[in-house]
Image (tube, rainbow, N blue to C red; front, side, top):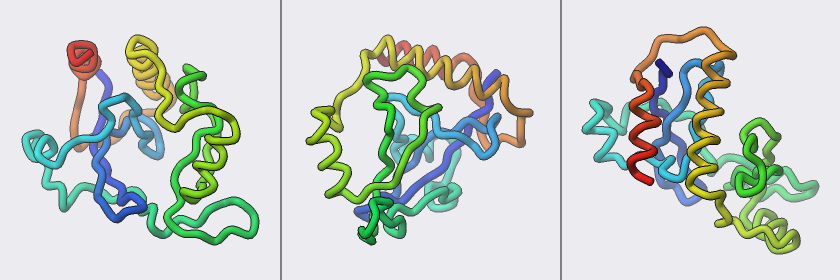
Length: 157
């Protein structure tokens, strides 16, 4: 059984975004899938109050990591794009302002919206969850998922 929970972040535009995390890693690691965002209504159906879900990050206060750029509202940039790397979550990320993030993607020709196939994305989720299960001792869970979570992902695709 894989133990997962919910966390939220405030994006650069000020919107609260809810996502799933693996509670078997320390700190809890984000579970990345194409349906990674959890609607507030879905969180309520799961028994959570969106206003009380732990706030894990606020992108409005993140500064761009490009030298001599102090722009706030930086986005998470994956140096190993998920469209090319099955293990993209194991690679480093950086915080880039919208201008520098778009510049990187424009310069490299790798579109921000480029995604791997649904089969590859599902396999990535399975591998990530399995790795987290091997890495850490289970912690107190605010929500438990079992293999049903993976089956649900498979049904959606």
